[in-house]
Length: 412
Image (cartoon, rainbow, N blue to C red; front, side, top):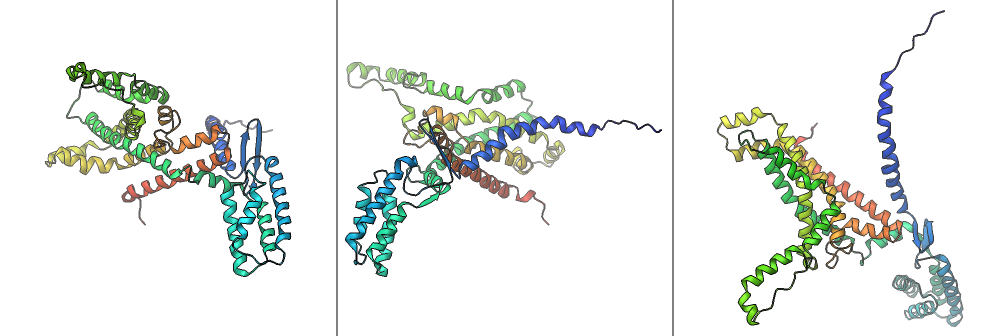
């Protein structure tokens, strides 16, 4: 009898080691992501202690719990049916619209009147042009009351309605990101070149590298609270400005010809608020960007720099002709990851403006609006907003990559 040799297949153990990563990803990332997309196709929210939905279709002209508006639909439809008696053997006229709308609104208090009026106007205009009997148009208006639409359509309408002004929130987000990213990349490039330049031989490099990275380790919430305290009416910045102003105008103030300086309410001004958000994002992330760019510069063959110096190239020419072109792949990575982080900007403006995007919602970001839907337990519009953010991020990242990396792609 031949004994079989037992062998250990070590290649399988790799799957056991990486399995926890995939399990965590599926549970905490993939499932929530897919669930968010699914929510966008349903009416699903909380009304007090009641859960509404998930409903794939909803009433076209009413919102809320069906038990509250269904009787309005039924009674209004009955009233329109009774109205047909008064319009027997009468051809449709433009004035019929007012009669239909008045009959419905007398009963249906929760109807979206503007939306329903537009639909009735179309029915009446069509009936008038075709010379249809008024009774036929009235019955069509009653049928229209019971019309349904997909919950996804309503959710999209909520997200893009004029009162929400999602386009404004997108530009708010991009403006604050750009204001923070431009100084961030410039300062980080300068520091990365300085720290990696063997000719400069800067002292205390390890100390400075640690210091510039420290803001990245502080929680954004704590960092935001620090700036709120510093820039408050009773904060140190107002105190310093007030002391300087009073000391410069001490004689006029004593004579009563001038008043003491009133505290500046920085967060009542769009420029100050956006600038503060941009400054905080710059301080928090320029250290991390510097480390990434340093790694890219150190990956460039030093013989290229030496050859350029021997040929008489200046430091600026070496920087723009060698460092920047060879650093472009890392730069693109930094740009795309910063763009993704900028689109997802939330905690800093949320705390600085107490979630209101003040002044006049000029610092309201897309994620802040998403958070308001979630606070209100309205998961449908929140899901649509998430899909919108996903699409914007993907498109902008693709455009940036395509435009900046076209010279590095293999051409066939």
